[in-house]
Length: 241
Image 1 (tube, rainbow, N blue to C red):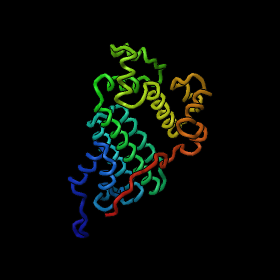
Image 2 (cartoon, one colour):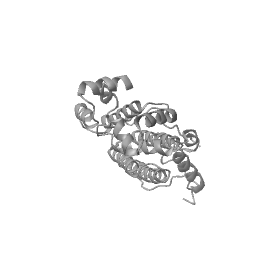
Image 3 (tube, helix red, strand yellow):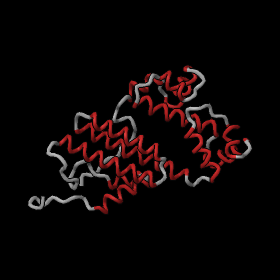
Image 4 (spheres, rainbow, N blue to C red):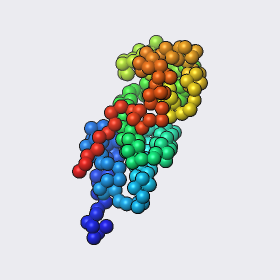
């Protein structure tokens, strides 16, 4: 490597990139991101595809730990890590891996942006959001959430709307649809089972609400995005420098 004047990427550049993901700074990530396995990454295998996979696993591992440190729930972070490593393991071409890489960075960064935004909420709203995230698979009643937090329904509803700009019911629906999208893209569960797991009152109710939010039925959404590395819009574009 010395003879060929090959050098690894400076540690400072790597740390700035991971810190940008941690902050949810998508513009910063786009400015600092470089193609996976490109100049400065080092050669971990003489097989190009295996080399990319090794670098992808390293990148996911670092991103996961930075995001946990930044406030992402540990279980969420490691589930995402497992997901992207499995997708990488199943990839058969360099283009597939690069698409997964782009999606992974975008996904983690956008999630961290939401987390950092929610961290500015007051204690009661933050605890309310945490409760909802932990109980999406159960029947969520605002009265039960309010009791859990020791607040009145009226006060919690007013406070939540004032800080988030959404009603509690709207937020719960949005989180359930987001979860359904992930399950339709990356699992083999039938749509009827996903709707039941996420506590929709019936399959027809699930289809109706899903289409209102996404413009597609669950069946159409799966046909378009199932196991696809391009499922998340707006992937990171990399510098060639």
